[in-house]
Every structure is written in structure tokens, then in C-alpha cells.
Length: 333
Image: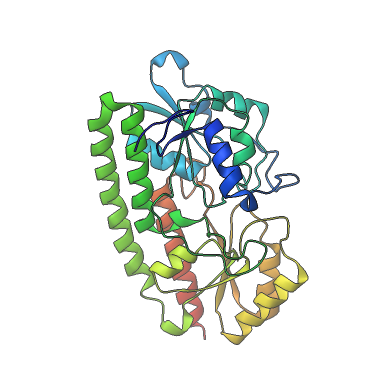
């Protein structure tokens, strides 16, 4: 992976170069962030990250959301300062960056982003940042296309919800850090290897948890279609209210479609996600008699004292909630 700046080739590109590339290749995936949920809630991932002294000599890495920040911190160890642009609990698809976000990005040494159309605000954001390299973390991941709606046939961007895909994220982070800071390459290589071992262990745990669900109950019903990769890996059938977070949420048609699917498949338990309203899903539960199993974490971690302060916690928590919900529902039928 070659760290590159304007006028040079390579996998990492400066904000200016990347903006030009995106304009030519993925304009259809970029939408206006106006009126997006959570857009006004702009802050750092943690207070500690925002107050890290600039004089400590460490390079500064920004990520577009908290899940990536946690992955990156595990690879960085104590050699880099890692910070998320969006704060805990923010809706990341249509986030509205503030001037302070742009200032932080301009002072950064590297920006890590998901891509696949996840951060619809990112092209415009990078257009305001000059000569800061960035790394696409979903490079080499085989995307699952969105099946319907305005983003039909575009990649489903929630690739990190598969532990096996997360290994690719970690490798891309490792490569980016080695090129950014070659003096600490041994640390990044060792940290990435250790973190990958943890992800492989989590993968086995999730398999054991979810394989307990009977075949006829293996329907994962969520608000956003954010679980396509997890459903693929663990042989679940995915049903969702909408394919990707946007301004069109909980329309009468969406609600009615899910009601019909839940009824026809005798789905015992349904779920939503923490960064969107769950009112529509609770309406589905009330109408169909299915249990509302709670909100799952996808686009954001929790606070330190919450249930998923790390990405590994997120994977374990979601698998446990899904398995327990579907098993409890199955046992009552």
C-alpha cells in the first residue's frame, strides 16, 4: 500500500485526489446530508480523545465513526492518537460535519473511512481538506448488493458486521499505519495479528451462539438492512424495514410490508438499532404479536459504561441478543 499525495499514485489518496476520484466513480452514492437524523450531534468519540495533547509527538488518525476508531486503536496501540469524527450514538449515514470537524481533519495525518457509500457526507467533507491522506478500509471486501429501494444494486456498506470481513479492515489499517509511521511497523504488525486472533475467536463464539436457533426461527428482522453480512455468515434470513438509513423511514408501506413478512414466516422476535427510532418496529410487534427483542448496535459503540464500549463487545452483544430473542420466541410457540 503506497502512501500517496496529489500527483502520485497509490492506494492512499489525499483528500483532494480522493474527492476527484469519488466524483468520477461514485457520484450516485453521495446524497445531501441535510435534515439527516443525528446530524446536529457532532462531537468527538470521547472527551479524552479530544483533549489529547498535540505536543506528545504522536501522529493523529481520524476515523469516520466509532467502530473504526476502536479497530484502529487496537492496531495503533500507544503509538498513534486515534479519534472518531462522529460521536457515540450519531447517525453516520447522513452526518453533518461542523467547521470544527474540518479543522480536526486538516490537522490529521491520516483519515480512515468505510466507503461503499456509507458516509454520504464524506466526499464534500474531504473537498474541504487539503493534502491529508486517507485509506479505504473496505478494499478487497466482496460487497453484498442492496436488493431494493433508491440504493438498489449499490454495495451494502455494513461489511464490518462480519468478523471475517473485519479481518480485512484490520489488515487495511495495518498497511496504512505501516506506511504512515514505518518506524513503528513492528508494533502495528504485532497488534494487528493479536487483534485478528481475537476476531477469529469471536467468530467461533458467534457461530456457537447462533447455530442454536432452530431452522424455522432463523429470521433476523431489523429496522435497517444492516445485517446482510452477519446473516450470510451465520445462515440467517434477513428481513428489514428499509435497506439503508435515509430520510425515508417508517413509511406506511414499509411497516405494512414487514408486518406481512413477520406474520407469514411466524417470526417470534424482532429488533431495531440504537441509532434510529424503534417506534415503527414496536408497531409491527404490537400488530403481529411478535416480541420486540430490543435494539442492536451497528453504526456506533456505546459509552464506556454501556454494553458495547468496543467492537468485539458489539459483536458479542448483538449475537447474544439475537440468539436469546429468537430462542425465547421459539420456545413460546
